[in-house]
Every structure is written in C-alpha cells, then in structure tokens.
Image 1 (cartoon, helix red, strand yellow):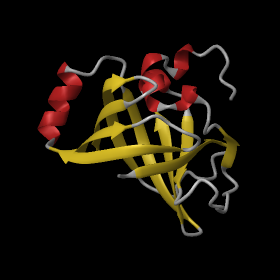
Image 2: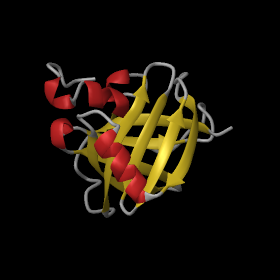
Image 3: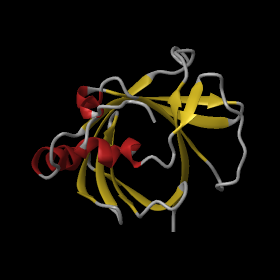
Image 4: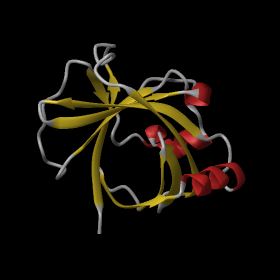
Length: 159
C-alpha cells in the first residue's frame, strides 16, 4: 500500500521564482468526497490516474498509475466536471528535500501553494525563507476542493 505524507504551505515571498522550470498540469476528478478521490492528471507529456483515501493528519493512502495521454484527455473532456485544475508546477530541491510549488491558473489564479512529501508525520525538515503559513489541515486547499469552490470565489483568502 502506498502512503502519501504531505504538508502544505502558502508562500511568504517570491524568492523561489527562477529556481525551477514550470511543468503545466491539467487535472480533473472522476470522484471526490471525504472518503476518497479519483483524479485524472496530465503532467507535461505524461498522464496518470490516481486514487486517494481519506486524509488523516498529513497522511493518506495513494495509488497512482500511468495511463495513455489520449485516454486522459478523453476522460478530462468527457467525464470530469468543470471547473478543473490548471496549474504550473515547479519542483525545487532545498537542502535534500523536494518542494513542489503549484501556481494555479484559471479560476484559481492567484493561489500559490508549496508541498513537501515526508517519510513520516514527525519528520523534521529545513524550511526555506520563501515558505509561509502552513495550511496542511485546511481542506479548502485540496485540489478536489478547489474544483468545487475555486479560489476566485473565496471571500476570505487568508488561511
């Protein structure tokens, strides 16, 4: 069983810019509720089907499978409701830890979130100066939630 342990943060400043190249992401959800999500994602020139279980703390079960990109395009066009997630992902290695920064586009324009995957929930890690407020437990920042209630519709953009 695959386990995803992930912490999520807002960005404190723009000092991360220029540290990595952007990869375009497009994703939609075949199913999303508090118990599980089934996501279709195109990341650059690759496509994936991902099934995730419920989040407990910063952890959840995750199963990811590579699929043909044409199948992913068809599922996004024909099966996944709108709005969908469009974003640019920047992958930055900082002191041996990999940070993924998602700059959202479309209806989530203006939202930028950094994530770090860990080996366990108690694992410590160095925090770059561009990392701001932690939003790990705030379900508004889940990608599936951003499809239902995009960032542009939020009245209060603070965590």
